[in-house]
Image (tube, rainbow, N blue to C red; front, side, top):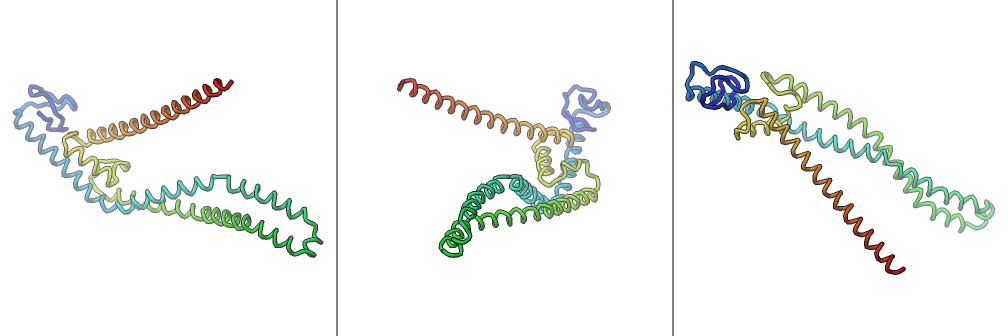
Length: 240
């Protein structure tokens, strides 16, 4: 039978709820189950109503995810040092070539000047493009951060306007609420707290499976590298 107070499942001869300790005295097993069913139905209807209230935020969360991915990409590109190093390494030989040609030869023989310009032009254009892209990213990053902050503030303001919400802010996005609704609807949990625990356990198991997959891939790559090294070592020993 089910507890009237928390909706948890108990044995048929229990006098107190094994989870919350509420007494079962005064009601039969059937009556207790009916009350518990009504309690779970109320919880399910409440979560469904919350889903309808937060479904309007789907576009905001989609934009937020897109902006966060863009910000991560921009910051990763800005941290890369190879464009600056490539520009320096490119201009060192060009500068050496230009400075090695006397100025009077440049004036007397325009072919030298034309060849120098043709050689230097691709490097100069590449450098200009790299610098322009870095400046654009530098200008774009504060704009993306500002927009992310605006979306977060709008989402949080909407969260505060929804009454009777038993969920914390981190569980009040439309996708998490839908997942919690499905957990309750399928009977995997009898209360809001249990539904959150089931969701957290599911997320933890998914993260562990992903980590195990990465470990297996890395171990397979290491095994393949060891086999390749052993083969080459065997070939080298045979040749000796």
